Amino acid sequence: MKRWKSVTASVITASVIMMSIPSVIGAQENLNYSIFTMPKAGLLKVGSHGSNVKILQRALNKVIKSGLAIDGVYGPKTKSAVLTFQKKYKNLKDTGIYDRSTHAELSKKVNSFGFSNGVLKEGSRGDAVRSLQKGLNNVGFKLVVDGEYGPKTKAAVLKFQSRYPDVKDTGMFDTATKNLLDKALND
Image (cartoon, rainbow, N blue to C red; front, top):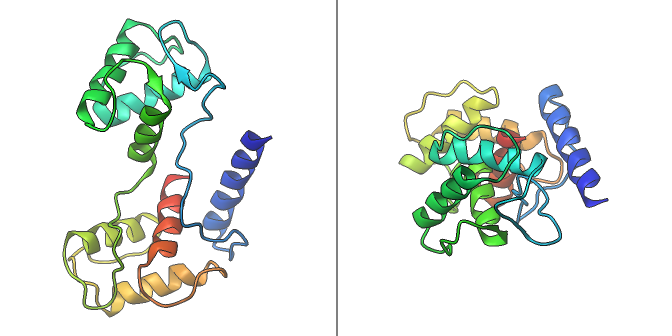
């Protein structure tokens, strides 16, 4: 049942964004970035197979350029790629077994645009603003990526916020707006 809800929510969100119709889906503070639903056992390991392993292989190819064949078989090469990923992130145990914490970390890397956690507003400057401007451009705005949160960036944020009735139209890039833009970019 959860899987259908997730698929349905993704389809509705993507449709709303593409048609530029105000969404009825509210902003969430903690988005679930999961690239697939983990099996009940809570892990994938050598011998596992199926569509989840294919998704895992695609994600590893994207994040660490592992060059895995997308065959759906968790063999020695997939284990090695998982181990490489785990070693890259110090908070993970390097076992070569794809567990829940590895799943959460890889899902964030695949599905997060990398926005900063702080609030951005008119007058803000720097790389965080550049990331915001690039993200807004990827959903149809035409901003100069200059790292300055000026009137044009504020206007684009306001226009983006106006698409979602559950988000206040403040012109500030806050947590709720960040979560919606991140989701729009990754659905």
